[in-house]
Image (cartoon, rainbow, N blue to C red):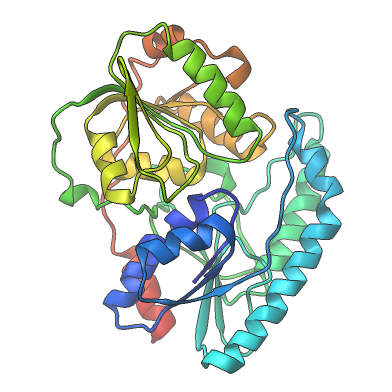
Length: 351
């Protein structure tokens, strides 16, 4: 199991995949780098693990992230090649029969069954660069085609979370929908929790945008008298809570505590990262989404889910807490039913 280290979302959504693999008596090895690998090691301390090359993506405070990513393309392609070489060595040293990669396009091999998990079959170009959409799609599909199968972490029908990123297209490669993947309990296992916080704020994503949003939120939260929990999304080994008046701040919450925080909060504010959206859908929680500036996937998801009256969203530069809380009232979120799709996909892979 090899998730991309690009924030923690790719790692957290691999947790239910690993759990299902273990439930079907598979011997699982985890491979990643940085905090993503550390998180999975904490979640599954008995599993063997390996370090993969880091992409070391750099971000700026500006909003035009796609151009910055373009400049880093040579480095990204080099890392894809390096992680492919590492996998080939691991196959020999650990007798690996199959690999499941989450957005790591180099973690495939002709010698074993290879699966890629991604919801981005369509890469959204920035405004004014619509002409680049077909070029980006062709490049992505060529890399997906190296895998035996593509698993899309979403529901297949009209009630879905990823919209045009995953739906409404014929592809030259084999794909299947696994249903949304969340580290939290399935909807049928979730109970009603007593309200503890009026507002839960979850920060995540790359720097410096994570810190910029934290600064913005603390400034606006200081004038609010509601009971608030703010999860900074930083040191995953530090779960110490610090409370001053009505505001409690914690660096990280393990999955069970984060689920409890979601269930016991009146409203939620978070990024529109896809893993965060799947977690919200798993517990049926309403939320206010703030896309990372310049990250076209998050901007699309925020607009798409807002247009479907599922989650309210507001751009970071325009964010006003009181306005967002008021205008988000009609948006009730979504709870997607549990599905056997993931179980079936893994049975097929192991068969």
